[in-house]
Length: 502
Image 1 (cartoon, rainbow, N blue to C red):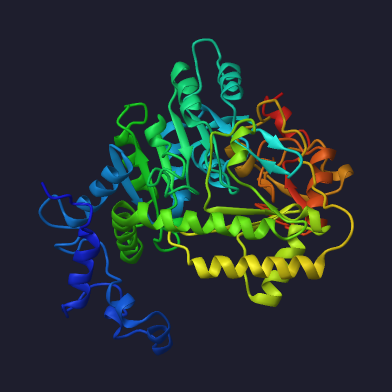
Image 2 (cartoon, rainbow, N blue to C red):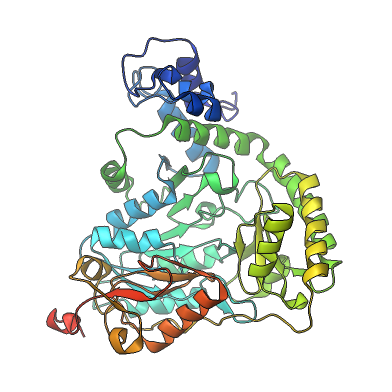
């Protein structure tokens, strides 16, 4: 029987309709590019405009079932080992919102990894669910979050039990921004022993499972639902992602489909969906070969980086750290502390001198994010760029980190929905005005990306001091209405007590 993975049914149908010269008496108004601004046509090309078509075109996503669109999602499910895969056109954010709505409806309790993406908390604002948090392991030396340990998840799930009422689900992240994968098999065992599904945000690992040199897919390691941001590494267009549901029955597919209908635009981008179909074909057919070549180039780059005095790079040895189950070589994490400079300074120098733009900089590291088919010449060149920058910037003394405060152990004072939608007010972010008040905001210093404050939690002196130190060092505050932290949005004094919270 012929393997269907080398085909791309939706993308091929899209191209067939878009480029055959069909008369278009439907949206969009640019009519395949004819009515588009000339600058837009020149900038993105007539072919892109020709393929920008609406939903419900016969022979593309309408007509006799299975339509090309249905076949495309089926092929994606087969490639990733899922019972059902959904294409997402609002990124993994859309998937996180759908999963929280499906698994954490009003009043339901879930356990969430502390440094989960902000869209998990946003999803709980939408759903009305109540989280308690499990902290990942943390490397104080590099200021870097690792994975959640199985025992930590077990403790969090037990603490969340109230009589016979157990948490509805456990949400964890693997891999992290730094390429650190958790021990998903162990986490799945713990979650399933407690009777709850394990949901894994694998946004940064859409290529997992397609080469023995990268970690296995969380879905094949026992997770019940997995998100993959295909655009981040595997070659689809920005804002496209996939949500994969396993055949375990712990995450009801019909419920997820229902919540996705609530969140999905009635005008989804055909370009994004077509890129998902094509990216799935490429990684399923050629992914192993492409990854093999890229991983070999990464090994050469590591050698080159380590030849530079004061520079080091993370490698597979991170597997010996607590909470770590695997490592992704497509993240080149360069430790710059040995040259006496911060990652922010090195990233600025790379950009200003060589127009090299990195994915992430922290006090201790710069992170280069690679695609599945990275150019080996470009990797060798960036190794030389790092060497020159290190030679020019090097100064005596080691670099520093900003240690994250210990995450609160207690459940939030209020559910995120109540705090976010409550009668908030903006106050000066000084301790006299803000201390003890309940936050309406989700604020994470990036890096390291661990939320220091979430809607429904109290503002403490330690949190304010930590966030200000990050701002002073050049970090960004994600989720803050005032990124400079001059002000903060909180609930009125005593609001939590008046609502019966403790």
